[in-house]
Amino acid sequence: MSATLPAQPVRSDAPRSPIRRRRSRASAWLYAFLAPLAVVIGFPFYWMLALSITPPNEIYRWPLRFFPATPTLDNYVQLFTRQDLQIGRWFINSVVIATSETVLTLLVCSLAAYGFARLEFPGRDQIFYSLLFALMVPTQVTLIPTFLLIRMFGWLDSYQGVVLPGVAGVFGVFLLRQFFLSLPRELEEAAVIDGASRLRIYWRIALPLIRAGLVALVIFVFLGSWNNLFWPLIVLNRLEMRTLTVGLTVLRGAYGADQMGLVMAGAAFASIPVLVFYAVFQRQILQSITLTGLKA
Amino acid sequence: MHTSYTPDQPTARPGTWKDWRWYFGNFLFVVPFLTLFIVFTLAPIFYSIYMSLFDWEILARSPRFIGLGNYADLLNDSLWWLSLRNTIYFAFLTAAGNAIFALAVALSVNQPIRGRDYFRVLFYAPVVLSVAVMGIILGWILNTQFGVLNYLLMWTGMPAVPWLSSPRLVIPMLSVATIWWTFGFPMLIYLAGLQNIPETYYEAARIDGANAVQLLRYITLPLLRPIIMFVAITQLISHFKIFGQPYIMTEGGPGRASFMVIMYLYQTGWRFYRMGYGSAIAIGLALVILFFTLLQLRFFGAGADEAN
Image (cartoon, rainbow over all chains, first blue to last red; front, side, top):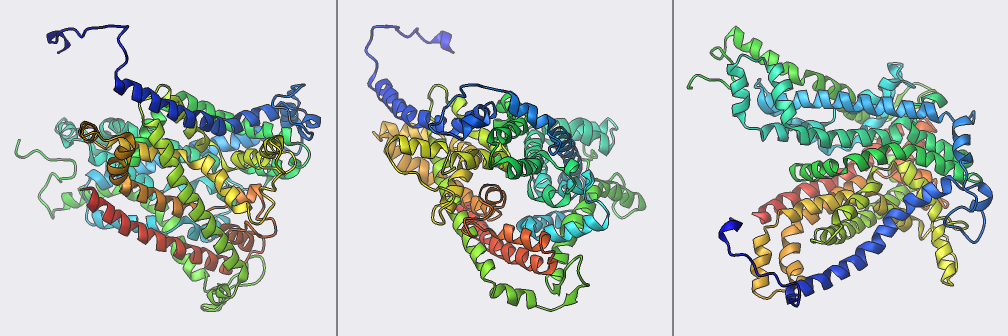
């Protein structure tokens, strides 16, 4: 199309149009708002990292230094060697719990979502709409009975006790069902004619097509599990079964008064994996959450 | 092809044996979910109501039926009312703050300026932190004696402020910390809504000579109103569940100035093992939240009508 248009005259010395000028003045105002805001939002991240390499005698003194005079890795060394902290083990616990909760949730919810979206059986829609009512009941109501149930199963201080109660989330089914419903039926019909089974169509055709929904759910479930405090706090009591998030509250309780650098090293260690993950996948993460915000 | 069938249509005529086998195979897709849902969500909801009618202390004695006794106690329990008042105060402050602040930020990073993607990425970053990390960092920044905030205040010649140890300031400061931590999510929801406003509306208004303020006042905000409502109420509901921030940053203090309902539930259930009374607390909070959820459904229904 541009080929049919006459070339625009380009004059570098031309005065900028009034609209352009107004626009650049507006963006100056925007930067005046956004730049200080970026400092406020970003500073706590920097401060965590800076304090984690600051020796104790520099933290508890006045005036503050924004970069340690004698940076040290001693806080990190202590973090991994102190007997009363099992940060390596807590990290493994968190990885195992968050990963298994994510995988199980994705599997269970996508199967059910596909069933509710595409496969017919008597009472299907009645069951689905009664699930939506359960979305209105706050999860806090289930805490005490579920805890007693887990205790009865003998699952206190176990991975399955933390993971299983969270797997069947109505939100996940609701979200993925919306994505399945928006797929064109013809693709699946073609596969049926080719003789593919229901399970195969779900796994090989439908699931790969709702990638954006799955990504959003992975992020919500993984971060929710990794960052969860209340449930692991009451289900996991033995020191070596703690998750990182619960372990950090222990760390802060024990050393918050006189070893803030050590506590900050723990906080940095706990958040660097998720921050790196976020930095690598930020474009996809922001896109799929925005998309999900529209669907839900 | 006339006889082609979609996945949810049985191969045989309805009502035959083959038909029911087909339905059963379909039903199996939802069985894992329904099983877990019934065991860990549905049954506990009803069991919680049942338990709230008992004097039920685990590790102590066997449960004793007391009817609505727990609820009668709750109505006379000053700690319950205090924690509920604190929670409602916190939830309203944080929801309003988040709804307004995230809107201002979303409007700014929706403009075609250089580097806006970096701003978006940075502004969403705090959301991925755990409440423990957030509480540790911001708790220390707000520390009266060694915190950065007071350092800056004193540098400008003002006296130090006991941010988290003053009964009057503690809930507003927990709210500010929570907004820092969570505003990225409503920001993304607003951005999604802003992208849905057709560019032609703005072009038409600009041709009529509208300035930036008028565009905002007469196009953006009215069209965004349903989303602002949605954000405000979902934020309110989610912040009623506050637990981690005061648990880590203030332990409910000073005194009980930041003591919240879920902390009371935690204390009752897992410090004193009073599971019956704990259930009554949980149901009491659930009723408050349910009230606002119904409000949301009403507003959201009305909002959807307006958008058309």
